Length: 183
Image 1: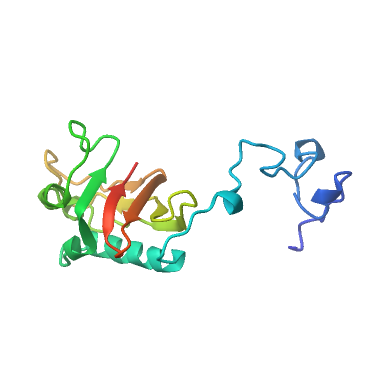
Image 2: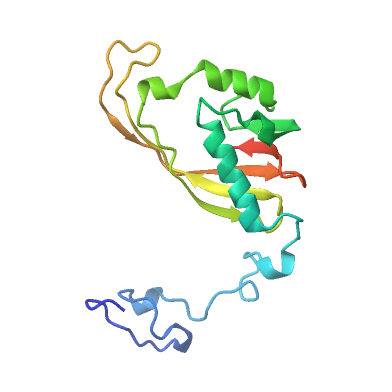
């Protein structure tokens, strides 16, 4: 406990020593679990197995993202022949892109020209308990417009901080990426 924090005592015994600085009326009467609120997924009860452990899948996900974001690397050997890229807007007119189409589109628009300090800031990698072959992660990129993008006559110099977005990579049992979803 930090020096400036006080340990609170509440009439809600399950919460003793927790919720520092929170008004007692905001603290739930009981600890809310899936047994108390069926709207919560009981992860331990519903969890499904997968032959590749979570930590290994996370490393495979990071290796794919690292290669996919480096124009000097080819991430293609990391994907399955059935690879699909899905996003809410891109591609807007088709259900998904395969690897060849995704790679071609990705190479046709190099964001690093306009944003040489682009950092996707991936974090919070975790395995989906209902789809254990899927690794979810968050991207919250930052970049500064220091170069010209198509249609731009001068770089703005503006610093961009993107809102967080949930992304996922789905793997097959060989460790190859089958699906990449963003948004």
